[in-house]
Image (cartoon, helix red, strand yellow):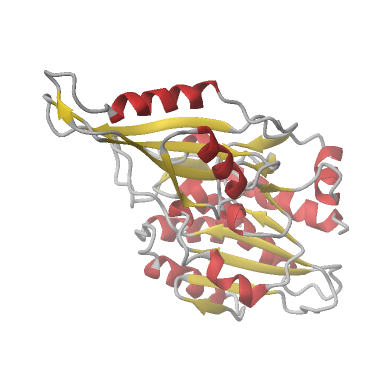
Length: 348
């Protein structure tokens, strides 16, 4: 399994910010060539099918991303230098999502030449996940469909995120009328925005989820005014909404639009909540092994796929996007073993 640690070290040494993943994609392709595994490419995305792919069988996608965020402030080592200290491997992207990525690849290669698999496997190393971009997994889905089930590799401590919340960002504009602050003139857009923000604070979506809980609404940005003595005629504020499976983002946006007096403009409605039922064979298998099942508040590539999926991988989410990011090599080895064990036993 050491070769997968060496691959991860190569990836750490290769800067791969979102939309700048060309060199990291080539690292993945070099590795697949060394394993004599044919693959397909589209832009910075790479994917491969198991050797004995049979269209009549159900297909499972094993996907993780090759892009990283930019280094957080506070790094005391070189983020692009893989440093091993005992069991720890430091480096940008080691935990999110290098560890899950190489673990899923190892799992795919383990099954690659198996001619009696009850399902097909597709491995994908994709781009732009960190920015929910449109040139990542989304552009290769037409090439690999139909998919019956997907495991999205993200650091979950090898616990199962059975579902994840959707992400809806709203740009809201309260409109007023400008006037001199010293006189009783104008209509203060800032005050109107505050009234709407209070509505949001007190509002609760009716349907709660057993796994994901309530829809979460957070006002995260606000701006208004040009100078101290002018009543602002417009106030812009941003609302971060994390939806559960009971509401499509489009529906949630319409509900909030009706609630507020401010003009409401969704940036996008494509990142919907996703997941599987607790009665799905994979969820039941996980439960039988005593592994924790939970609902994730964060988004991943699950948000852009329409078929059933889960999020699971070695590493811990709390380490993602932090200075001196790291993963334990033992987490990767254990993750590979568990992925293989689960697929050996899974019956779709």
